[in-house]
Every structure is written in C-alpha cells, then in structure tokens.
Length: 119
Image 1 (cartoon, rainbow, N blue to C red):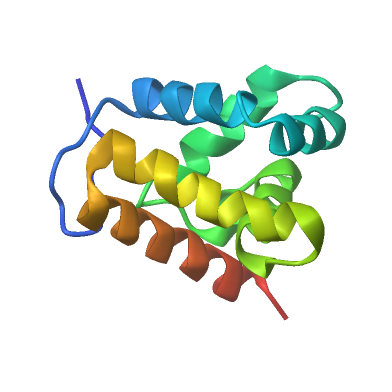
Image 2: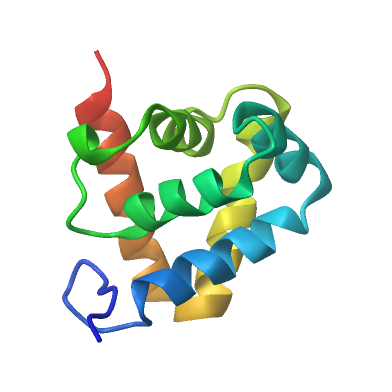
C-alpha cells in the first residue's frame, strides 16, 4: 500500500487513513466544522476527498478541486475568525498525528499550494 510521505520522503500513514484522521479531528472543532459543512454543501465525503489531495505532497494547485482550493485558502489566508482558528488547530492536529517536523513539512506544502494557486 502506498503511503503519504512528508516532504522529506518519510512514510507516514496510508493516504486515506491520514485524510480520514485529519477530517475526523476537524469535525470535532465546532467553528471549523460548521464552516466546512457549509462550503461543502454538507458533503463530508467531498471534504475528505479534498483533504486527501491537500495532504498529498505530490499534489499541485491544478490538482485541487474548487473545494480544495477554498480549504487551502481558509488554512493559509488567516482572515476572519475561521482563518485565525483553522491553521493553529490544523497544526496541532498534524503534529499529534505525525510529529512536529512532518507536520511543519505538510503545512509548508499547503502554503506552497496557496502561493502557487494565487494571483
């Protein structure tokens, strides 16, 4: 089974399990869960699909769905209440799941997706 790797290439967990764990944690955050429920049209399977792409270090901006791009923007733009809550919460979740360095590598990948997709 292929595994999600951090940017340095260290195998972490299978992609589907990693995305599932992250989405499960995100669903526990009342505000972020509310926002993702709204922007996904209450379709958490789409949210999980978007996170599978976002968390995959081989994904480029053109590989993201509109929902995935919106989630990346929410994570990186740090605007409004959601922006101020999402990134620190996601940082904690990723660190708990993978450790601090792989989490930092994953967040750097997400930041690259935001920069490369931007104007």
